[in-house]
Length: 311
Image (cartoon, rainbow, N blue to C red; front, side, top):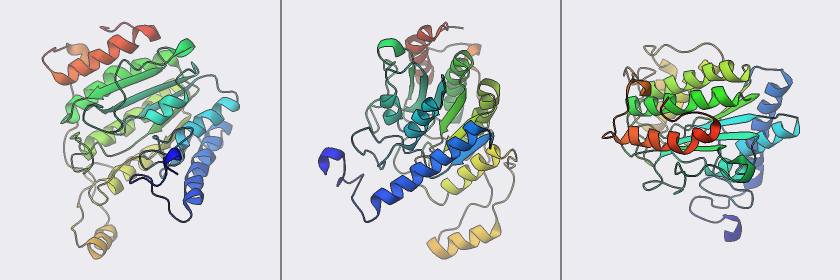
């Protein structure tokens, strides 16, 4: 079993394991089919986003890699350009590996630096292979990065790459373990910044991919304060009915949380922060660790995609 990544602390064997993992993958494929056929503009698979599983083994809580399987399915249907944007705190290593040498797929991952977090990959120098050099893009952010730095890094890398690549469909993974309360990682984002990222990816889907957008969940281990709120924002954004940051959480949900956990649930739908940032185009500061991370990515990946690192 260890040969296939099973029986480990991250991926224990349990009754019905295949059925559960296959059901998640099937949900993501159903959403992909709806997007590709035009039955829906956007497809959501909130249980999906299991981005660590590899072709031959499970990894990192992930048995089957549903985003990679969905992207492969798009390619079988005739898609010539598929973009994948991963905003989980962990590197989207399994999806990157699946399309490492396939120029039809652009993978972009923003994550905590591999020196301080699983899976230990995702350096800016990882750019793809053979005919697909430049098709893998990695933004490795220092532990402790907060809203302004993370949003600055996102907008300095993701939009120009998607505008150049012009995907026929955009696939995104929205792990919410970037939040400051998440127990397994070290970035310091708020619900407000996560909400802003969901909205930015939605806009980019319309701008660059004709509105074809397949979105998944991902990591997230603070099950009261973070996961319900940020993914409620994600689904509302995808449905075209974004939730106001000032809106109260439903009283029925707060009562349920109190009964089940004994914890008080958050009363508002966000953390009440502005989620503001300064655009990278305003100037590069070599003394700022986030700016150095941005420049490392732009220097490594932008020229390979016909873009200038400084512009």
